[in-house]
Image (cartoon, rainbow over all chains, first blue to last red; front, side, top):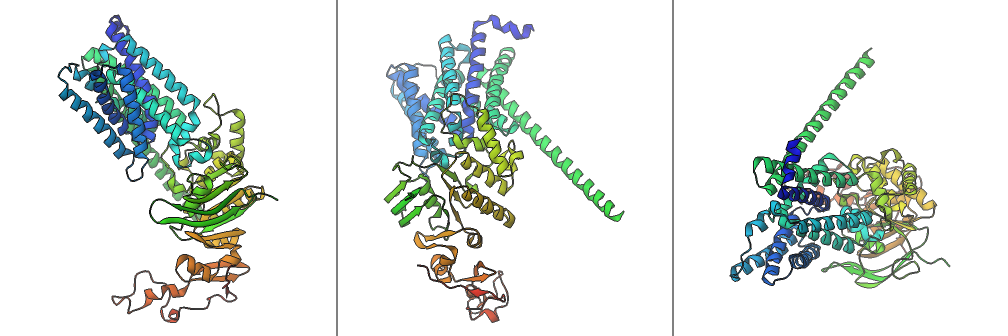
Length: 294
Length: 299
């Protein structure tokens, strides 16, 4: 068991392990709504948008969480608002809002000479440099997200499943869209510095997709996706430690491996079921003919 | 005097270009069982959306029950099955429980009473044993029943259904309309849209024929006439009565062009019905003995 507990003697690993598990769980949990709304690109896009906000807050010397929070929330609301226009749609809205925001960030970097922040950390994450304060932010966002989803479970499910009809059943689709935007922006902001702009989308999309392959129930998908996200975070951190690979990439690769195995496994199961049905059908026909002849 | 559940006065609606609905006056009374028929693009779904309060009229006024804001009555809406995302991970029971999604609750899970009521409804609709199935694993008729159960779980005063008989076989269509009949007898007002004229002629007590505006309203015998249908669909249709039932079909004259050698010098089109010669007159008598054409003008 020393291989399991050995790395705990390092503070950077302990922090990274907790951060990886929490970030994986949070992204897996909120990612269910992202995937089912068919907005998988939003995780990728919003992280780019918030990157622009992060640069702007640095230049204006505002606290990261305040600046990026406002920027991320406005971006998420803008995406939802612009995406409601039938002629535009959610995918194009994500492309428009997030690339403009990202471009603004890059433009600011090119104009401000005193910008010295390590861009690699923002783009690829720095899970091994996680500070306790970042873990507390993750814990806070995680608890708030869980509470919000549990308290508004059925309205959120209704708007995700059948948004056209929701208002008729007394569920405000606008309020639920706004709640979703807030939760998503908070998730991206709290995990951005840990997983990085370029990798965050995978942790939002892969665990829910794997969970979807394994269950037909929304409640089970929500639980399963959270567990899978956590497992990817923990296993990824250990593999990263022992094989000396970048932590964020390892977490994403573990999630990717989960997808490949589940995809192949469920496809094989389906094939076997079909073959069993076919053979049962041919047996019936033979039996039936025999009965008539006899 | 009983007040109408929903009252539309001079309602018009547009999505931004051509008007979708013009000057609609309509009252839905408690216990009504009303069918809305008309060609594609006539505004039937938009009318259902207006009745459901999903969209607001661009002109005119809608009054719901005794309250102007729609709180006066409870609505149950069953959408067109084509609009549902069938790959969404949701079971039949989860769909039904959404009927009370507006209920404030500290716990995300349904109460025991809610589950029992959902199960009772599903049993009543004949799909009780399918409660834990995924919605895609049901037949068309069962899917329709699952969404009717969601609407009934809300204990509605008015049930709105958008094309509930679309895409199902004759037996299922018959079963669904009988189910709606029995719900109506329990006191639930029902409004549905459909393209199936023969089904509504047989099952529904009152109809509204519309094509952006209301063309006719009344009982099937009053409104399903060749004149009204010609105005509605822009095509000649024949209405015959047999054994007390109205039967509506394409008039042979509607096929005249398809059989005209001059209109199609390259030959008879592939969709060819019957012999061209004896239909050339267009106003053919009904082929069945004892069937008489119905030509009534609505009031």
